[in-house]
Length: 120
Picture 1 (tube, one colour):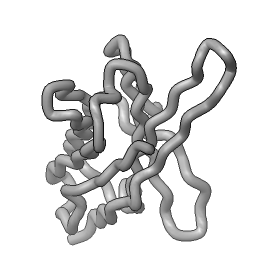
Picture 2 (cartoon, rainbow, N blue to C red):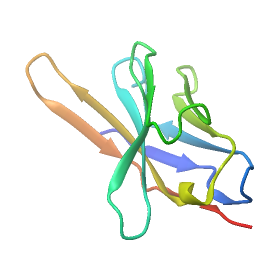
Picture 3 (cartoon, rainbow, N blue to C red):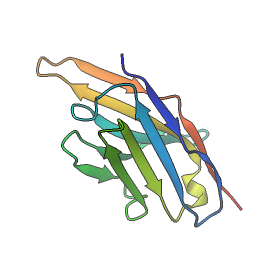
């Protein structure tokens, strides 16, 4: 069982930065893809960014150039550096770890979420 704990959320002014962290309970980053999702009130949960076990990253168009996902395998953490924040970035941000084995089994774990509010 993998446990994920997000931290770093809070209130920030438009244009400001915020850094989220996702701490995993074990050494999983070399076999799991880690995703950051977000969900605003009344809206669906959307993918924000991902980093594969090989280090490949990908971003939603809405955050490209502003957000950066990175990982520290030694600390079992994945971070999401968010710059130039906009009010529309306000949401609960969730960390997700997922892998599919060669046999087709899927392992899928979620953190509890952390609130990010961008407001003046």
